[in-house]
Image (cartoon, rainbow, N blue to C red; front, side):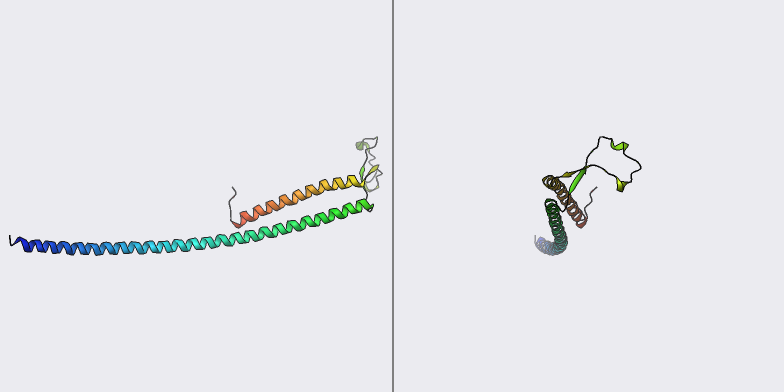
Length: 168
């Protein structure tokens, strides 16, 4: 039995040495994995920060472009309102008179073909200022709606172009 003790002691020492060595290798592998994870996290955080900065820059540019378009729309509407008010004032004062052609007893298709466009004598009816103002208000509302729709289309195109969105 005495021969077994040194053998057992050698085996025990060998097992401890192997276990310790294996532990060091395991610890080294874990440390390497932790370094790789930390590097990956840092790279991901950097990529996220760069992407966020890029998107924020795009958002600021799109916001500024949209604000400019909104200001332009406001200026267009103000100018149109001023022109419309001026026109209505001229109609009310009599400086501008509106009229429409009145159909005669003859059909328009049988009009004198020898008469030139600038020398035709056609019967016209003058429109009273209140009716002219009402017609101008209808036309102005349509023009305002067209300006607003064009501004919406411009805003859509600005956002689409800023973010490079595929629309198909």
